[in-house]
Length: 455
Image 1 (cartoon, rainbow, N blue to C red):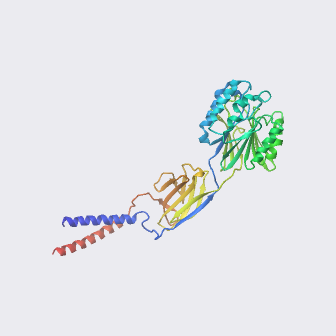
Image 2: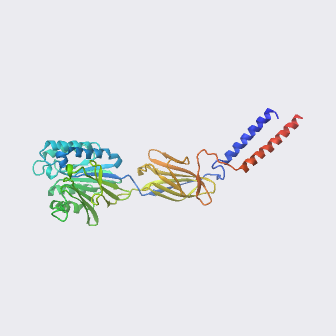
């Protein structure tokens, strides 16, 4: 046998094997003549799944008076955690300083609160220690209207000063109005606050004031608090859902039911504890998905949470759920069911399709749902986690994130495996033997014809 014949056999064998391999590549067999794509949109009731937080700073008077490092520690912690905790607002409940005439104390308070400037919306109010009965000028010098007027979230104030003010912000799918009402407001101030609420009928309202609850002398509201309750809270209970206060060293929360509306009333004050209060503050974490407000008490100064039932608890509160669409695209598969559990970050898909064919499932989810990473996806009970297989891909653009899966249909409609991209499947020894015999016969016929021509 000459070299040309040997070369011919080598080429023929190589081409035959390649042909067999191509024939056995995933999807080469049992593929339908035409690809039919089915596309459906699932409407999932979720808007912004990222929780957001409001931080409450109770009376800071003794920090400003003798422990400014604790005060600065609080506000620096807030700045450090704005992104991670999605902090959208900070409220200081009055008694900013202990002695209204002490410029040093106002400077201490200003240094601490200035850390929040250009970082997060915030509001303050006038407490009885801040100069109410004497001279509130220092309050206006350091925390007056002109300090906030250029902020987009600052709504305005009563009269010429800033002792009673309001702020506007949005979080989740809702718009909020935050009222800061001074200690012992008069009728004119409460009327002004009511008019502000009336001007924003679609906003959810939180009220911060200094004195509202007096657990010692009264059943619940103080005399001042009862006036605020009767003149402001009750008439606007359809919008006011939370009242915050300090003034008295105490921690408690009550729920008021007013004409079918729920108003939570919360007092927080730690001024009698060491270091002027040991840095304790309130974290109100809103979860639009779960319709809950998770209340926590934390001290950045001590780096401790207070797990007492009055300090850590959950409030039920319904927030707006704006619908958005999740797209599911199937190729050579039929979608039987899909379950998307955003709270647990799981997607479960049930499919069916022609046996032994390759199927594709593409789930497209708007980024406004704030998916994040580490999702778990199951297709017919087979679980995949992000990035562990070449048969699971993630794509994204400016608005959407897409998850693409490849799989093989079986008789039970369950998957026998996900397909590895670029893999070359094994085929049986019988198939290989038949291929070699075929090549041998073809080669023999060709060689015989070649010899006859030579004769």
